[in-house]
Image (cartoon, rainbow, N blue to C red; front, top):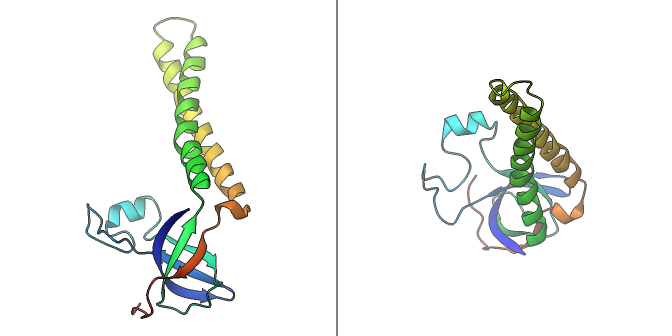
Length: 153
């Protein structure tokens, strides 16, 4: 199981909203919580890495906890997220170039096929990630408290 320290930022019923707290500061911006680079945060529509987990420890806002995710779930997610779009991009480029009537148009058809393959791969990743949220295998789990003292939020 892969473990990481997180801080509880909000309690929502029986679930807690957690934010990963890096032990090492980010090499680019120096932040240990959230995204300190506003352009990247805006580009990816995500300023921090907050997520929900069942509050099995009855932790309070500001408590530090250790959360874990199955290694196999992380590996399969990484393979789908990176390999599928790449393979579909290459397959789309190959299929696209085979439709070209002349060799001079081959590059254009390959580029169009590659873009279509890439977007197909990204759609596959989106569908996969929507489906995996329903699976308990991919859900982060609060394992234990990290420290006794809460931190101010």
